[in-house]
Length: 306
Image (cartoon, rainbow, N blue to C red; front, side, top):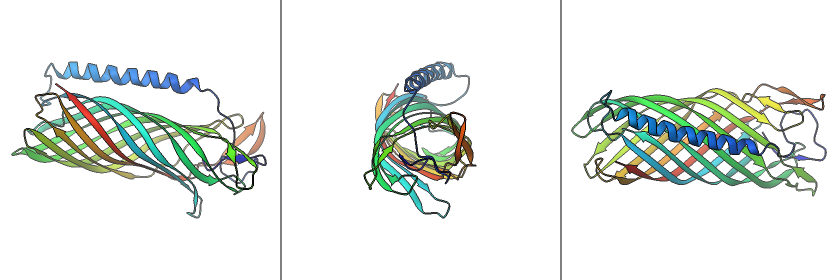
């Protein structure tokens, strides 16, 4: 939601702009539960696949770490910018994949990651007074992909699809607006279920390989909670977006080795329906989540275990 709030906050013009940070323990519990789930699924998936129920080719358990440039923008109903957040984040993750197989057959990848960082915020108060501050982000993502590889002479085409769940916490810090008035930060939590589908190309050279993937991404369920007044729940609108990924592995698939991933990922949310905010049971006004765009450019180092 756009902006922070000065002491005059409270009109019903439509954008969420207030409140204080509460319930900080929720994020720690969510982190521990999701990381535990990722480790369990990665281990169980590798153990099950090792029994060769299906011909999935060489499965690789991997861990990864890297940085990503995170850009979040919100827009008014006439398309003008309301605010922007940008900056680097740190990310770590783990999973299981068989995208290194060289023959035709089913392919899969499942895994999760954690990310966090502090971004620069450039926006305005609800009254339209410019301000700058910082926003703290932390998030979790879990994803499953499956498809089929059409291969010949150590190269080929992939068709794949799947989906995932993502949670992130966004907390704007208190600051002063351009006119010197105090502006108070607020906290939001997003829960997103999405589908992902696309195609790719791979080339295997024995001692190394590369893969290129691209496609579309669509949120099938959106939920946003804001710590405002008595609490406000919104459902950002759902729009199609895109993604692209280039990955390299430096070493044969039969041995442990390193890799590199370059990625671009997005969300596109249209404006939500308005919802009434109350404070102590007293109506404050109707608010929306504006049209929002998220773009992430990432680079991650990977280690594959054999």
